[in-house]
Image 1 (spheres, rainbow, N blue to C red):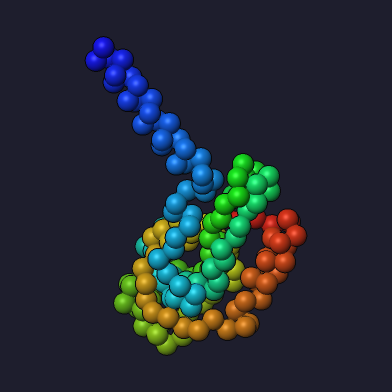
Image 2: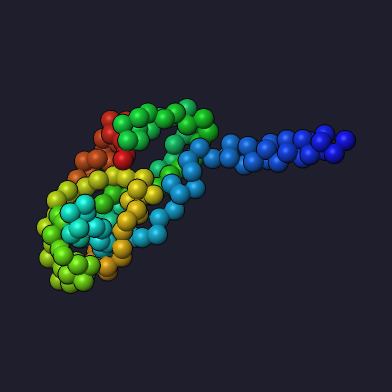
Length: 160
């Protein structure tokens, strides 16, 4: 009898957890991001140097039931309506020896941009980043974003 009770309890717990996750298509970490537009961040590259990166735009993208989205080159069809955050970032060159040097460059507004725009899922955009400061996003910095956004809205671009 004890075995049947445990089995029923386990079945109930599994069904509750399945219904909780079935209400969301994207994982919770796709829906939150610890930084804001204009934040200046640093990350360390494989050569040990630091780069200055800037958050340009954060979009809450709603994917309707049956709609697809391209993430890292793979197409996913949403079984239910859900949303995720797409974080657009400019990435600087790994040119600083220390975080302190990167912070000083960010404060002075002097760093080399290597890639002007990359649209990324929130967890990927946050990974390995350290906050340095904040600077308003300029219209010129959004040119790559605007090209991507038009292509994305037309179903011709995805996110990383």
